[in-house]
Image 1 (cartoon, rainbow, N blue to C red):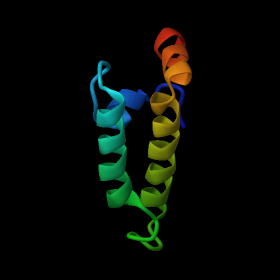
Image 2 (tube, rainbow, N blue to C red):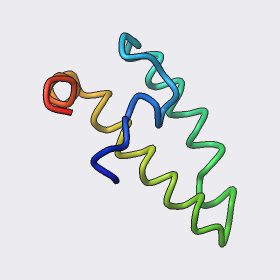
Image 3 (cartoon, one colour):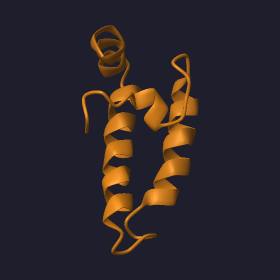
Image 4 (cartoon, rainbow, N blue to C red):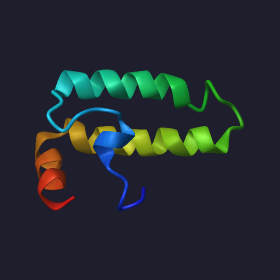
Length: 71
């Protein structure tokens, strides 16, 4: 994941999004870019990995606070 890539933009959510909004955005994007849905598409697989990493950070309150403070 690029250090300049904003996780909120990646998941297409606002900075004040609730945990349920983050989860909903992740599930929507995960269905769209999942490797099983797009077999052989390397760009979709890479996008799915970045979306998963963003969700892992933003869904955890401690990691999210650290990300918000340090970028």
